[in-house]
Image (cartoon, rainbow, N blue to C red; front, top):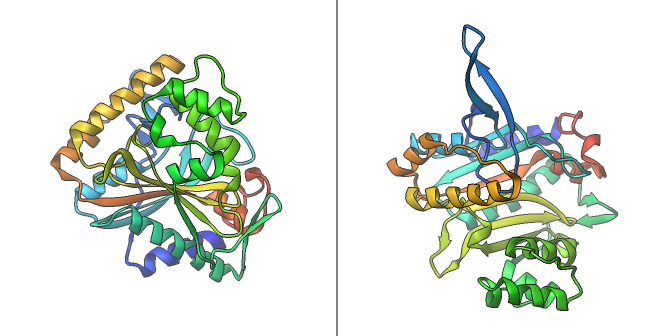
Length: 320
């Protein structure tokens, strides 16, 4: 429990409110490639009343609290994602999420630096470890945009191919990365990330990879300086993706359009779609304050703190 206690101490010292939101939701997620667990709700007559889902994230519920006037909140929630299983993935895991009103994604970056250093100091460790690699949270963190990372680590001009799948495929293939006929733009992006970029991130010091193409960030606001990119970042430690953060999208109409687009693609790829959370969209219409939000995998943080090589080794520890 030492990691969990340290996380609570970090946010409590910053005057965040710890909240707990319902696990059962009308929709599990609006992400094309994340799959929820569906359950059947029975009435008092034990007959089918409605379908609900185990949440894959407490995000929608926590943003409703933000609209209701909660300015700084955090939660460590058990979440559930179907179709997952590897050394870094489990169908059930613990997700830390926090949100700050009147803040942006760069404030979230500063929170990440503070949190990882605080946890390390509390546990008395100098570095995080995974896969024979070490990462010093007390050093100068690398902050690099996605476009810069594509250029530095893959030699690909991402900005030139944001709306050019054919040209993007040719550029990826030229770098010796496998390209299959019919690969979508997203497929190509993920292939480059997995083969050329992610293995380079978070070595020696943590890395914040920021400003994703807007198509890869359905819940984040567009960058005012360049609407082709969104205010989203991920943090990497020893090559492990540890968190996913946003400058939150507050425009209800744009959010609805993005959700529908995501579900259209999901139905095409997987033959399923999830219902919209109309209460969430109504909350956005009422007014979500300008805010930043972050989701961090607690089990992965425990792995990095303890040097574990498989998430199964820490799921039963309660946080070291």
